Image 1 (cartoon, rainbow, N blue to C red):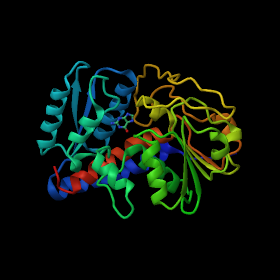
Image 2: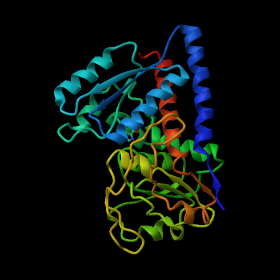
Image 3: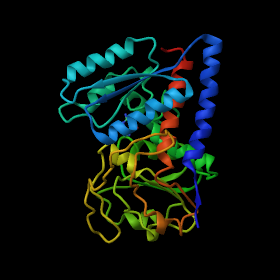
Amino acid sequence: MAQIIDGKAIAADVRREVAVDVAALSSAHGLVPGLAVVIVGSRKDSQTYVNMKRKACAEVGICSIDVDLPEDISEPALVAEVHRLNADPAVHGILVQLPLPKHINEEKILSEISIEKDVDGFHPLNIGKLAMKGREPLFVPCTPKACMELLSRGGVTVRGKLAAVVGRSNIVGLPVSLLLLKADATVSIVHSRTPDPRSIVRQADIVIAAAGQPMMIKGDWIKPGAAVIDVGHIVSAAAEQDVMINGNGDLIKPGAVVIHDADIDSVDDDPAQPVGDVHFAEVSKVAGFLTPVPGGAGPMMVAMLLKNTVDAAKQGWG
Ligand code: GUN
């Protein structure tokens, strides 16, 4: 049976470390890190994640600046809001929850966030630096960073390993592939046009499941002893999933994830009933290490956001 990498417990450790940093900033410099969390519209899964992020801020002493905007806000008005936050010295980090409504150009909005406050790491300059050898972005996107932290704190070595990333989304698949490469793994990315993804994933020592396709990764996709990190539920919450083709060559229906209304009462939990990409019952019998859903990458992603926000405040960029 696989060793379960307990994201909930590891995230709690990280939050304790962040809380110590926040207290030190406050006593040494009278500085309270501030994170602006912007949500447009009322998409249920986005609201759930945003509530988790805001609540987590409060628990470690970060000031959460809540910006709730209507679904029909114009693109220029949203840009103006981002500029206002860029100029606010009490705001050290800015996060615009994705996806945005269809009439708004996501790339345009992300490009308007000051790179020094880009705690989500999605500004093209930060992503560009992530892609280049010998360069470092100011911030690494939270979910990919969570994957790497879960591997290292879970005791999995990345250097010299074969890694397979399932999915090529801007928020997870692409950036986590770059991080794995920088950590000296040999990386394959399988996606909706890969003819036989299972045959590639089966060779991997490390699998990042980031397709947003519920339970697509079955036991026979996994090399015995491999480390498997499941972030499918986070990809589907960003509405970025591709249509994937399963090991039998069948199309898997996209958008099948249902995240139910959640009454989140703890930042330790993912949204109620999130569904990952991994068939847990099968894969846990084959893999060496596995993250559960919930209680794996979700809480760790939030913890990485807190860490990025404190790093932003430490730089005195606010
Ligand atoms: N939607 C799903 N995941 C994320 C994330 O990491 N950041 C933002 N801004 N939106 C998301």
